[in-house]
Length: 56
Image (cartoon, rainbow, N blue to C red; front, side):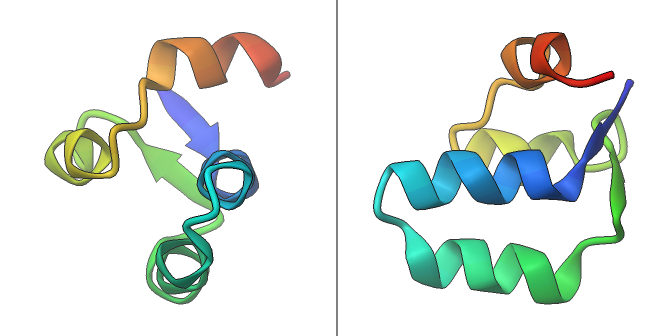
């Protein structure tokens, strides 16, 4: 599955994790492969299945 980087950033900012959101914005591509980046998403406590439902 692929998700838009901006969705990850929105989740982090909603939690008040602005520094992590800024890092994600700098380091990740515009479209994030959830399989390739699964460890990172777990570390950030991002559930790609819930984000994927809000995407296109």
